[in-house]
Length: 121
Image (tube, rainbow, N blue to C red; front, side, top):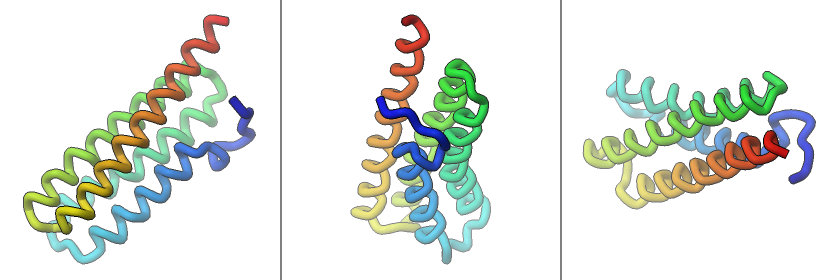
């Protein structure tokens, strides 16, 4: 694994940022402000927990914050189901975004596993 010097270099942070931007753009005109606020906050939480964990500078802290990030990823995915059901977003686009959250969640989990394994060495 290549060493990163800042969280912005992490592919998972970059993908999380892109996802958050898509969520904000998608929810721009939604009038259900409670829903809109919740899904936007959850999407930002993904990238911010990656950043905060990285900045803590210990593998244990980073893994813990990655776990929070993964949880927020699940929250966004869950809300995308609801957004589709409420006809806030197109079904195909909701599925595309859900697939992005699934892939991101897998990548976060993979990094968590790597951190735990490298600690044992």
